[in-house]
Length: 79
Image (cartoon, rainbow, N blue to C red; front, side, top):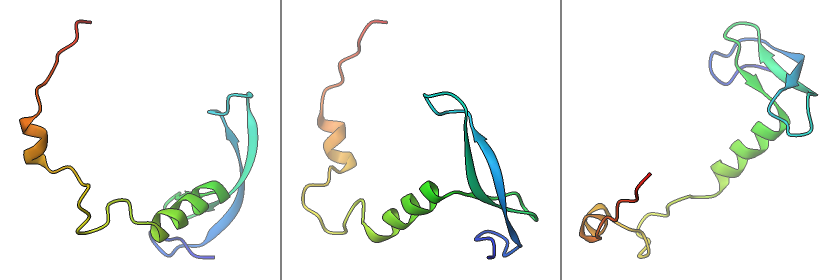
């Protein structure tokens, strides 16, 4: 397997997911030994989903343009 960024060699690595709400969790991911780029199965699935779905289709009538945002009043809230 080669790296998406630098085409270096990817190796399987075991990492700790410190952001998990259930505490520490070990994950298996691929890490580039050249640049350090990391890809895990969740990241790969999310990137594939972004490639297949368009977030803002071209020519869509429901898009809000900057000029429309400027016309709307701004309400400032106290901290």
